[in-house]
Length: 356
Image (cartoon, rainbow, N blue to C red; front, side, top):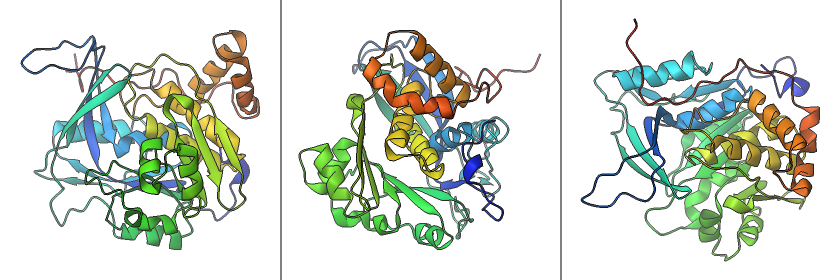
């Protein structure tokens, strides 16, 4: 497998590139719906897949890009939990030594319905019962850590990760309270980068333009990255004043589940590899765009072979904007002839078949 950090690795570096913690869901994804389900009717989907979800989306995306990934999570001792653990451990090579199995606890489940380029999700689950916490009290040394900020809540492990020398990359979920209080993002003081989407960024900064929102966030965090959906992404380096904007590439989207997580994984990879800001932004957007062409959040994440295949196709055909393609010329310096066994594992309609 290609190691994107080979040029920057030094003796004595942490054995872990990226540490993350959170909830692992079993995702069941329906695609090919013509419209949203209507109350009192039955809708049939033309496609279906199942795969690990939740924090597994980002963990898988990081591992497929060659980063040594450590995940601390709670797994149920049901078949769903066994499937998710096996897919992440043996299937993707993710270090689960800090994870644990909780006896008598069923795995959280999310049903995702994709239609009209968007998705609607229904989830069910319970917090893992104490004392079986999903994460250790002290995170391991790592080059980077990824935190999902919860409005109004502090994550103590983030401070400890910074103390170990980790760069912390943060995203944030939708604020169901509707407050969008900037004070709820207190953990940003410990973060290297913050990567919200445009709607989240504008609400927290009280701005009406995502680019203005990014500039405002750069006063609070060294790197502010705002995703712009079909328009691409915009980033501001608060330390140098450098800005970068990269348009999205044209793809036919099948399922957008997990695309934001894949974007973060791509940006973390480029940052740890010390690429220029615009290259990091372009790589993150490309990784996310390739992911939406497959079923499922975690198992839709691209590997280096897929990225290389896209680049070779893009240079040979005229189905992309030529000026936009020039933005990806840096891939010629990075891509290998082959990086991972083909094909990658994908989401399938069932979590397993009986052995013959």
